[in-house]
Amino acid sequence: MEPKPTKDNFEARQILAQISLGIGMPHFQPKTGFSGSPTSSTWHSERAKARSWPKATNASRPSEIKRHKERKEKTRYKNNNMHTVWVRLNAVVFFGLTVLLCLSVLAALSKIGHTRYHQPKIHKLALNQLRSIKNHGGVDRALLSFDLHADMTPAFHWNIKQIFVYVVASYKTDTNPNNKIVLWDRIIEATDPPSAKIIQEENVFVKYGLMDQGAELRGREVQLQLMWDHMPLTGVLYMGEQEKSTTSSFTVPHEYL
Amino acid sequence: MIDLIRDTIDKQVIELKKLWANKRMLTFQLLNLAMIVFSALMIWKGLMFVTKSESPVVVVLSGSMEPAFQRGDILFLNNSVQKVYVGDVVVFKIKDRDIPIVHRILKVHEKPDGKVELLTKGDNNRVDDRGLYAPGQLWLEREDILGKAVGTLRYVGMVTIALNDYPVLKYVLVGMMGLFVLTSKEG
Amino acid sequence: MDYEGQKLSENLFFYIIILFGSIGWVYGCFLQDFTYVFYSWSVGVFISVVLCVPDWPIFNKHPVKWLDSVPGREGKGVERESKKSK
Image: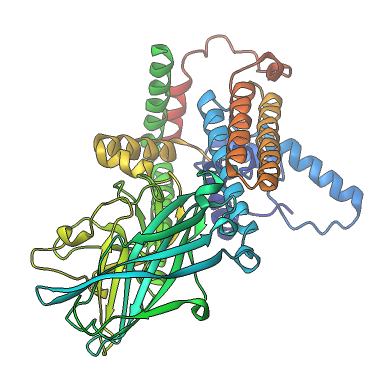
């Protein structure tokens, strides 16, 4: 008995047809016997000619399976449209893009456990000199310079486009239990030479002043920590940070300088 | 070349005439088209629900985050995170303005009740974003943030940028897609 | 292009793109640089476009045997069909 085109497998095959056309594989469109109007005379002749939708074959014997496959192959093509140049071009381009997407995702997946074994080495991040602490318009501002020695090379792999490295100062006040300010940042790209991936800075001035929201910065203990953001070619952005136990802190003096 | 175009147009016109003549097939193809459109809409709404963000996928429009994010990259956002941390790349909107902006958080001040006040800055900009905020606004709040960027795909959003810059392309694209779906017989 | 040629063309670009993509991927993985993957992929796509899109003679080895046209019925194909389905 030939299987009737039921509503279920019709919709499934519609979706499959659209997906396969979308990814550029027109020949994987499952053959349907239900093309267009059911009253067209070609429909009956097509159905009579070929039993073709993927029915669950009970055939367990290899010869039957082989025959069934051959029949599917033969009839699959007989009733397809003749493709024009545009369809072919569309198929090649979109299949190529799909493959590129898969390669990118595979590359991203291949580096999932990378940070566990490759951590950048932070040799030193410490205050060099606290230059000034003044009050401007009710807001305390400290300007300082620090030393930074870090080797960021282990953080790079083929799926990383760039690493954004930044120095964070964190401290507590009475009004704000938690304050985190970026003092300095740098962009290191994957295409930079290897020497750029190692940061050796002595007495570098902060880019952004250490400013409190109010005037409560004096006398506080400020912790300096290095953090970095991995920006991948494809996939998930993730952060890394210096271990809290290896960070250094300094105390802001009580008097204005 | 002109013959080829004329040929294609003639073929499409014939297909459309045939379609119009057969109302049942027309309805079928229209439903086909509707199914595609609604599936796309469902995926979008589903993403909005999962990420709790009003725009879970955004296209980077400006170059203020170069070289990390170039014009034409798309970003996947997640707004279901409770706290944002310094250094996160976030997308935010200034109140009463339409354009979402993708920048990085420079400063976080957290109050005892958990509320945060944030300052942002684009990686490629010289100064922080205070100049972009509403007049008199010094800090951003958590509510202004549309989401944190969690993933990226390069160049996929170029289509959106092209459509934005040349609006006539929108009609051309939709017209072509509609034509393609309406006149392609499956199988 | 005929049906056999179509099948050949599709198989050809399918395998070419995957081959070039995979070789580039493995090479790039070894050197930890994604640019090799991209170049190898684009070479693969370019070769596929050149080989599989235009109507080369190898794709016309099995021409479709069309039935002979019935004299007196030519040129009325579209009108008759639309009248019929009305």
